[in-house]
Image (cartoon, rainbow, N blue to C red; front, side, top):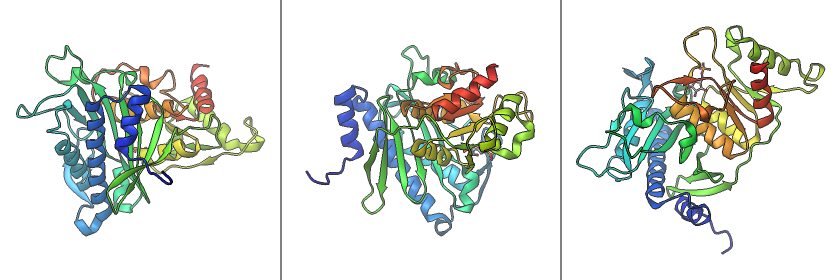
Length: 335
Ligand code: P6P
């Protein structure tokens, strides 16, 4: 049929036929998450008109002050996923402990982790923000669904994605068989497939890092970035450009779309922390998407998705994007 648009549901049904990677309970879960992201998008879009900007007056588990929209996004995802029967529990950047499905609802075989509103420092200045999510299977032998059940490496993910609330509202998703991008039709509330088989170019001229932290970086990162800054007359023999939105979803989506390398290295400000970004619901889902798009994602020493987590909210250094650049900066850590 000319101009037939493919909905999220049709994509997931056909992906299961093609790759067998989307059992119906996973499809239902992803459709619920997409509906929750749509609701978050509407709240973000209303902004000041709905009185949702500004501080909530509370702190999250990271000790960071919460924005009103952080709390709204978290509650939207919790409420949407309570009753469906496909989850055993949820975990969020905004909550100390896992949120078990209440006894009054049936439990399912999946675990959902999310950063409900990433980049929230950008909310009040109207810059793109987003939701990041990761889906794991709940271990059969899980005695209850406390922290232990979630402590699985990123390679165990069965699905991951992000919504970016920008000029368009997009949902970028993988179930382990490539990466697809859906655009929200805000008039009808439907998600339509607008790109399938997203691929990250292996090389790039664009890097993303918060350069104000340069004096705190470890030597390999300082050396790698100074080579990029040396441009055509330096060892790389070409000029590079820099972008830093300070919203991981926006920076990663740019890389998913046109390539680049995103870096949030560990630094000397907090030497006991391996980095700023969280492994379970930021680095792992983004790494899954990036690898599915032909890119690479390491913590400077090894593949992020091989890291065996020891804590639900643990942090990790992140180097992800165009494969040849990630491999180069990783090799410099090992030199
Ligand atoms: P900085 C947002 O707070 C976030 O977690 C990521 O979305 C983003 O990439 C990073 O922190 C920005 O950190 O130190 O540049 O403000």
